[in-house]
Image 1 (cartoon, helix red, strand yellow):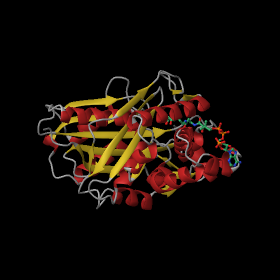
Image 2: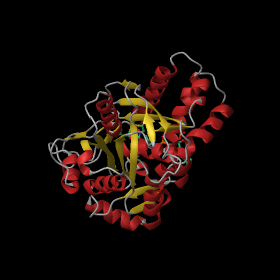
Image 3: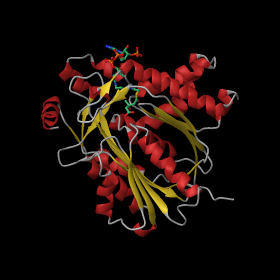
Image 4: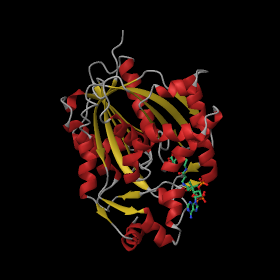
Length: 361
Ligand code: HMG
């Protein structure tokens, strides 16, 4: 029998600046309640000019490695999920490998599928291990992104940034179950043509596609069983979080389809979903990192065997529902230190500074 595979170490990194959505609303002369209540947004993490995507990703990787007892030579696969790559040909993983001095018999590459890229990289690592390809080596997976829309775009309040690194090997923090539940459909809901700096978005369509994907993946998971009984197995349910209201809308749509009343849906949402987005509220949409930020938050403090569901969505569109079981190191949640340190030291900027920053992008 194959041994279980999962997350051995986690590193999280949030860049050094942020703007509150209330301040952005002031700049755009919009009622702040639209961003805060209407979309459920809070803060937008921003990179300074010295912090590019490679630096962001590298810092998360270093943090995951610093809490892991292996050596660089134990890494047999390095994959970076991102839609903020630096080159059309050279993978972002090459920048990371260079800094980590990682070379030789290592498969190193970048994965792109909008916000779904980090999950695809993680799944590939799990399947690589389960297939026996990894032998006694581990995979280093990074999901990192900087999300910016054109100034004044309706997507602007949902901007954000962040990076998370996972070492995939022994399931010390969480086992990732071998079975997962994918969904895809070719659509243009959010895309960024070659040479175009900021994304094009059909906002309404993107919301519809996300909800359709949630319904389809959960239908595949429940396979005709009672939804409430299936969801009761999970201590937490994590979702790709472009903005918190998206997650809430999708969960309500899923449960309405199963005839639940609003009071029950709200109760489960408050217990099992809303708390997982604590770090997402500090970062805004970190694209590929977004779901894994929520998973990392949800795993903190879980006892062995407690379960988490994780729904990944990437425009285009592709989605996948994963299930995880906490391992012995989840309880301590050592990676929480990363985020607490970053949040304590980062700097709030005002609308004027944001305008200057955007002029330099
Ligand atoms: P919008 O069109 O400006 O907003 O942009 P709206 O007019 O639809 O209003 C939003 C909500 O605010 C509504 O709530 C309003 O009622 C409410 P709802 O009715 O939907 O519940 N509202 C107010 N509430 C309180 N006080 C007020 C007020 N005014 C209005 N005064 C949109 C919204 C999401 C379309 C935009 O932000 C956008 O285009 N975002 C980017 C796309 C996106 O995030 N899509 C999500 C699904 S796709 C995805 O997740 C993939 C992605 O991460 C990319 C990837 O995969 O790489 C984006």
